[in-house]
Length: 166
Image 1 (tube, rainbow, N blue to C red):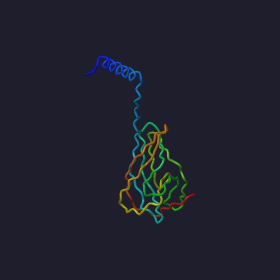
Image 2: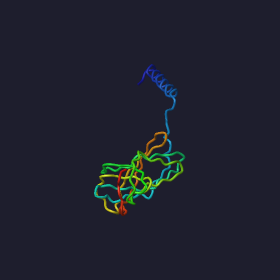
Image 3: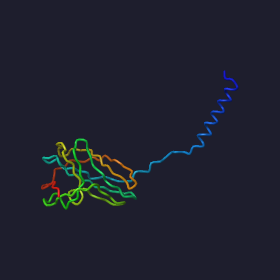
Image 4: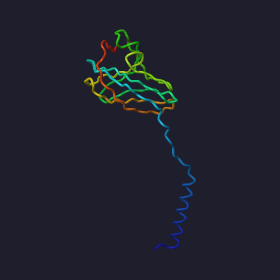
């Protein structure tokens, strides 16, 4: 059985706790919705003798802000690179390194064998038709980072595919 003093002390303490919690401003934060970015028609070439593969993926930015692609990765691969080149399948298209790739708001971009592309190196043998999940890392102008896992279908490499650096 509680004494009258203990009950009064409990009421005072609970009242003090209630007044403290109501005096503290609410600190709930709402994470903004991720920009609507779609990755479709994703393919990668079967590895060449050095384990190099070219990636192809359509990027559709349906959001009101630009996004920047930072990397495309998988666990077994030893390297990744974005590049620009006139064409890596015509035999005369040398690649230039690109640190990242921007996709403007409400625009589309195709990473592929011409203009802007991406490649992985030291990829273990992958058969044509195999599905390979790759993680695409991207960010917004405010520095909010996102990752999207995209399923890439392995296709035969086009004739004359060359990974020549400038």
